[in-house]
Image (cartoon, rainbow, N blue to C red; front, top):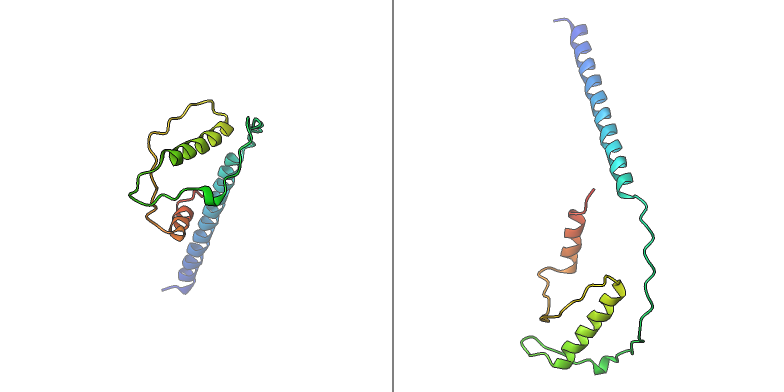
Length: 125
């Protein structure tokens, strides 16, 4: 066995592998830069929000009724939630009309840490 041929083959193989890896790294890096520039296109300036039509009076925390689970909600609470939604949606200026058909409490099945971990793991590159 000729050791010169063996070491030459090993060296050639290592050089080819590292050149191919370097090209793959450059290809992936270039694709990342292309996708990043495509995602960061300048957006048109948003239209200025119209001024609110009527000032909203602040609600004191003592005046807010408390609704527990399984208890029927008063009409006043439903009206307050509907009015708050109407003000928020009017500020968006979409021009659509909305109807509140039901109001129920949303229960989250996971903690804030779990939701943050999920959001981080499914975030696009």
